Length: 169
Ligand SMILES: [Fe+2]
Image 1: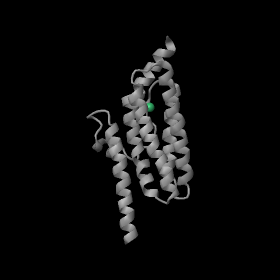
Image 2 (image 1 turned 30 degrees about the horizontal axis):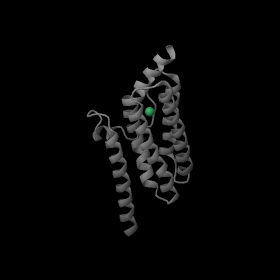
Image 3 (image 1 turned 180 degrees about the horizontal axis):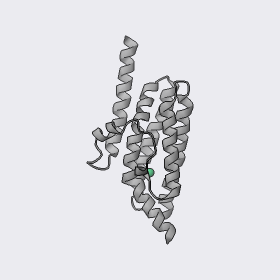
Image 4 (image 1 turned 90 degrees about the horizontal axis):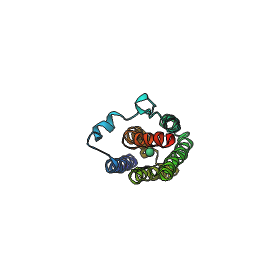
């Protein structure tokens, strides 16, 4: 029972931490916690995430595919699936940050800050898995899809528009 209680605390702490970070990053009133709950467990690319900029759309599809793999992973598979997800996210966010820097995108600071905060949380998950704390990581996996949908609409859509214009000029 004691270990179950401890486990519940770890889950709650991990979940609270993620939600607190997500709340700080929340871009507007239309993206509240209710929406986040509704969108949990939806690691699937849909046309609602389409940005009409292939380099970004391709990375977004891959992110959702890797997230789906992490969500479906068994305990034995989770370390590799999570490592693959983190590696993709690091590359993905790094590429967006580079595009923003190189093209002088106006919202680069806030956008890059979201990338940094979320990537740090995902990297902490690697350490949690090493310590056998799988549930907080699974909670992050459940909630990342909804965060990503918000992020795509709040930031990536503007970046895609900027990059389309930039590549035309
Ligand atoms: Fe982004």
